[in-house]
Structures are given as structure tokens and as C-alpha cells.
Image (tube, rainbow, N blue to C red; front, side):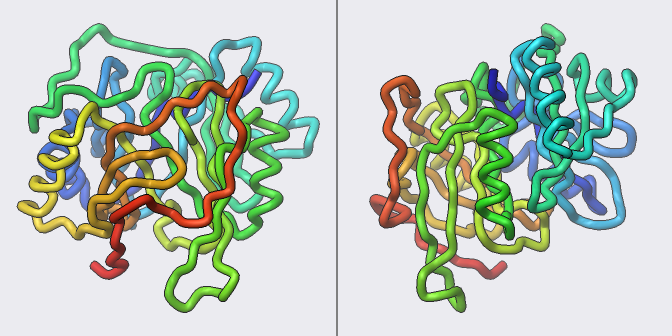
Length: 294
């Protein structure tokens, strides 16, 4: 059985207060203090983003979860059999992440993963300080992450062969100063209806993450977030647009961690039993005009 979803992300920062303001006033998540850092909540789970106090800005890890212990045990055994270095976390660490059990490992491009199982909720309702009605999460997880992947083919094989992901889409991205053939991207789904939970991009990113995505119910919720970002002088990395592959209508903004956060709505939820993977010849149906500065 495959990975079920992206449960959480872990980010290291030298400026916890910048993340508090950004998380609550721009993203609309609920911040709570945690061991010198923050937890950012976006649904019934105690947190979806763990912001840890550190010496620099760096994306630390993505927390992927299996649906149950049996699937977890089979998956971790498969990683070990394939020669992947796996480090079990302590019971205290698992409790801190609000899972029952997890291990640490890295994909072939060096992206750090925390792979676990167990859905822990605390019964407290989510109330957004910015009036966001809800985030689209549930069994689809918190959203998606896009990792830098210098070893693109090997890294894609890791997620498909060892973690049970499947292909959703493939494209070539043309960036200023890049090769004429463009840079490769793979969009991969796991065992839930979200179009992709992990994507891989064939270029380096100093922050450790290209972007992460969170989804809200409607266009007005996206528009209000764009207004909040502009009012807070957050760099808008991409204007509003609609993606070709997952049909998400979104904009991108720079986070205090140096990576972008895509804020969108309307992503398709394919039936994987009848879905045919695509090769997209362009990124967007419209919009998404990029500004890589800031």
C-alpha cells in the first residue's frame, strides 16, 4: 500500500516572529508556541507546519504518512531492503509530531523525509485569525510539496518504486538562463485524490524547497489572501493563474523561509483507476506571470 498523504512540514528559521505574523496574518493559520518555535494549525490536527527556531532559514523535512501500521511496516522494510538509510525516531519525537511512529530518511536528491503513521487529533476546532473558512485537507493531507531533484530519474523511481506513488504529469520548464530543452518536472500522486502530493524539479534551490501548496474552498478566499499578502509587503512570486495539469487557480508568494507558498483553489481530484498520466506542453492555461526577484 502506498503513502496516504503529506501530513506536515518542518521548517527551520532564525526569525520565529516573522513566521508567526506570516502564518496568521497572511496564510490565515493559527499559531501556537512550541519549544521556542511555532506550530501552525490549519484543520483538526494539532499542527500542519512545525516552525523550529534555528540559525538560518531552511526547509527541513516533509512528513509523509501511511494509512496504518501494517502499511508502514511493509513500506519501511522495503526501504531497508533497497539499501535506504532509515533512522527510527524516538517515542517522544513521534508524540511531538502527533503520529504514532515515524522514521527519518532522504530521497536520492537529498530531500529529507519523515515517514510515519497515525492520525492524531485533539478535538479543538480550527478558527482562522484571518477569517479563512477552512483549508482543503482531510485524507488528501495538507497540500503538496515540490522538491529540488538534481537526480531526477533516480528520485522519481524512489517515490514510485519504494513509496508507492504514481505519475500524474510530466513537463519541461523553461527558466531564464536554463538549457534550451528546459528542465524536467514530475508530478506524483499517492493514495488519495489530490492531483499531486510530491513534485520533483530538476534544479537546485538554496532554501531546500521549490514551493508548497495549500488549498482553500473558493476564489474569494484566494483573492483575500492575495490582498493580505500585498498589505503585508510579501513578495508575490507569481500572479494569479490556472495550471494546465491540476487546474488549480492560485498565486505564489514568498515565505519567510525563502521558498514559495502556492495559495489556490479548485484542484481536480482524479479517479486513479481510470486516469491516464499526461505530458503538459505548457505550465498554465492562463496567468501565473513570474517574478523571481524579491
